[in-house]
Amino acid sequence: MPDNEAQRAAQSYVLPAFDNDYIMRDSMRGVRFLLEYSKAEELLRAWGVRSTVVVFGSARVMEGGSGDPSATTSRLPPPPARPRPGHDSARWYDEARALGRIVSERGGALTSNGGLRDNVIATGGGPGIMEAANRGARDAGAPSIGFNIELPHEQEPNAYSTPDLTFQFHYFAMRKMHFAMRASALAVFPGGFGTFDELFELVTLVQTGKMKKIPIVCLGRSYWSKVINIPLMVEEGFISQEEAGLLDYADDAEEAWDVLVGHGLTIPPARGAEPRKDVAP
Image (cartoon, rainbow, N blue to C red; front, side, top):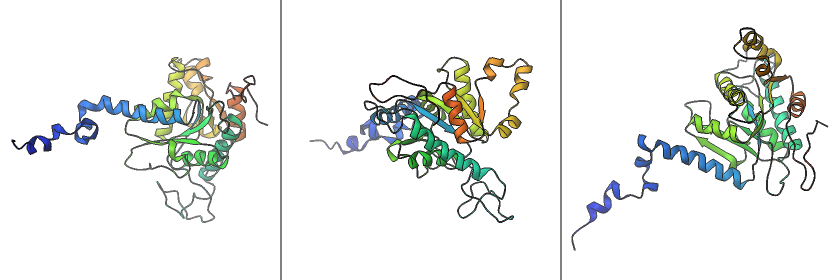
């Protein structure tokens, strides 16, 4: 019998699912998009996640404070570094953690309604605000989601998102799609370019009718009023007064919860009861 070792050893003979070089070709980009969509979608369904409250904000926010005037806030300071005195970083960490807990306790993430959970906290999965919101959900004993993205810095999964709901994406577009698909509300803490990108991506989807209207709250009136001049955009005619109303503001977690509920965040009832729109107790 002729020797077929060369044929069996050929790269073309490897099953496509096990051929990493083939999967990573440019021509297979569409397949990789599909895989990134499908893997997260199947696991979210397995956990019964029907809707989410998305939380965005800076990865550079830190927990705790410092009495040392020489302490600085470096790019990604390792412990035991702390925010400099008077810096809002620690406060926003605490408020994001509180919001994660409040939403999880009051929004339906703890209740499996016929196998479904609503208003589950979803973040970008990394440090800072993301960590804090995931941590708040864990404080409440609720699951939470981490949609991580491959980056050269600032991103690896925090220790508080539910392990089975901690994902990693290569494509920003697919990650953003998963953020949008189940979002019932959006809370945005102070942040930089990435936070702005994520905020305006979802605002534009709502503005253009590509996704349902959801309540959006930006925490930190002073910050947002300085970095985005919404009244000027209306004055110049680039957005309407109605479109300006897509954003609302709050200064702490409790107020943010009231804003979300006041703008239509639906809290599912226990099975057999009528749906209701609740208010913070």
